[in-house]
Length: 369
Image (cartoon, rainbow, N blue to C red; front, side):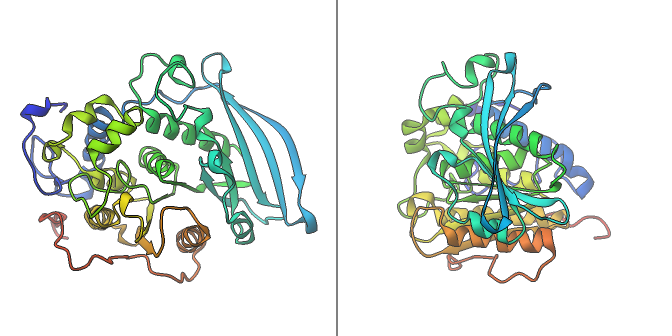
């Protein structure tokens, strides 16, 4: 399965997620779990590196609790520790409704390193908890493997995106222990490099019910093969940020056709759980056109699994930021997925509808389907 690059076939269009490198094309949804495992292994081997298993020693310490005026919200500061000799530490902020009548859904972001989310009040007003942590506490956003989790797990070849995704998973470990959080309604989000990490976290962890990467671009929802005008290339990202990925990924620079996947494979790993990709039309660097292509390809997998209403794609005007509009779009989509509310908004964004699709295959039609 892990074939040397020179032996990999050249595939100009998006590879078919239903067709293993060897063997017959899958025919029914019952075949998907094994194919999903193969796709996960491909992505971890060539692109992200491998993650350690969950530690068995996760502990939490409540550092502070603050009630906001009028008793509408409570913010808890919690310190999580786990891993070898309890040396992994994650500082978590959890803002929750003060008087929820039942366990509430939660939105988790690892982007606290960039400041608090801009829509915290709206998150709570709609009945969600907001969990925020700084992913750079888990692994630095810098070259080198002497700090963070890397020296604690020397046998693993993960890059920073995988390490940050592992950090998301550890916070999910904690959230599922809380009686005031609904473990079946956990959403993750992140912006830019944080969106790449959130997408990988959601792809690998079935406990995450909704995954929403924002402007995640190259190495996230953006395609390697289909480059829109002004978009970041595989060459650029692996030159400037090689530590985000496994070194094998750079071997495909100039030979993107040899990749045995494109990023629609990563989106497909989320299925049949919910997925919303949010994009900005002016953020050309994040390849909004290529993200439309990966969305359309992944949508074939969601439909095949009977989850066609659980994938969405949204575009707004503007540039590279995670603003209140993006957060409101996330909450609108989550309201439909989690709360059964009537949803306002457009979640089948195809602003580049004049372009030919980057793939010719379609989902298999199951026997008697």
